[in-house]
Length: 175
Image (cartoon, rainbow, N blue to C red; front, side, top):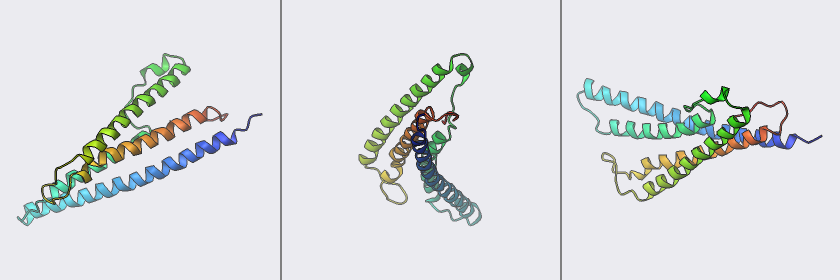
């Protein structure tokens, strides 16, 4: 009788690491959203009520939105919430569906590796500064490689769970 506890241990470890990353990203998303909302309300209030607008509110809200959007990608990937086509699932054998899911994972990984590399190059080669704060735009552009790296880690953990679920009897496929 094979020992399935090793496979289950790997699945549990991957799940714990993925959940920890998801919670950190989720906290960052909540922080960005809350801060962005407060800044936008502050900007509207001072522009239309006080008649003395702050010049920085729109820019900061935009940069927070960039970080929010890119960080949320890894959460959506871990929870399998991205848009996908499932039309073929009922028409092809289950082995083909599994094989297609691994091909999709490989294509997604290639995309995020390219995004990570190009985002890194974009960030380190940046010469722009933000218009109101005079900070380097590299801080804003860093959202791209950071999010790509986090998403690659989540993808890797999902694939590990998917592979090792095959070795644990009675387990549904984890995506």
